[in-house]
Image (cartoon, rainbow, N blue to C red; front, side, top):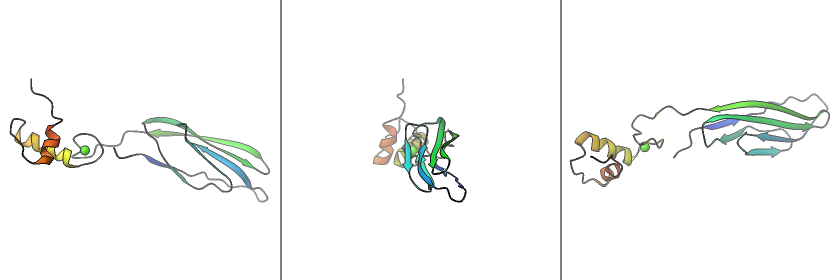
Length: 126
Ligand SMILES: [Ca+2]
């Protein structure tokens, strides 16, 4: 299945003159995080499930010590893709097979190998 939710989190930090960042941690809220020192850069992250995640950014500066900022990240299901009949986020030969089976009917033998892929997952007739 193709990933559908890459999220870019960009810590926006403006320190007063004379201060500098000594370390930072970007916690994505799903047990994964990034750490670094110096100015943070935008981080791209992929969440593996839909839901709400409490992300946080913690930084330590020379003058102010440790500070923390939180953000709720909501991952919602993506819109359906036209032609993706098996819901795996792409349109390929399996989808074509399902389409062909619907077009001709389940009882019509299909000789094209791509069509057989779709037929293998068709519901059983009772
Ligand atoms: Ca598909």
